Image 1 (cartoon, rainbow, N blue to C red):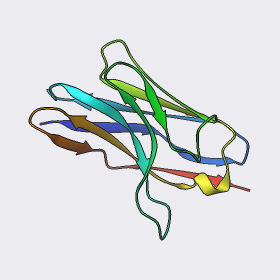
Image 2: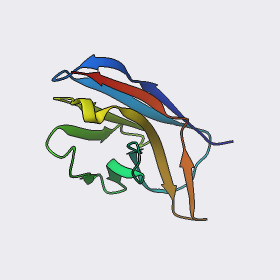
Image 3: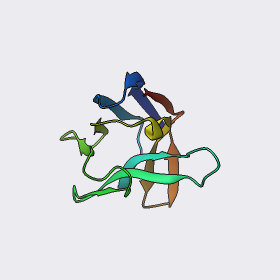
Length: 117
């Protein structure tokens, strides 16, 4: 059974840095992309950052330049470094792994990040 296990998160003050990670447990197959999403209150789910199979990172506009996504050599753990955090970054961050075949999205349980002003 595949699970995405998230770690990190918590409460920080504005301007601080926080790191979170997500590891794949189980045999997941070929992953097209792996990353993080969040759902701001009253809004649609939005991309935070994903890392593609080739290692290229893509970022949501609101975090570009402040967040950096990376992964380990085995490609089964991803990391998100979040710098210069803002109160509007407060949310539950969900890890996602998009499998190519058969097409399927795996989701983690989410990790809460709270940024106080």
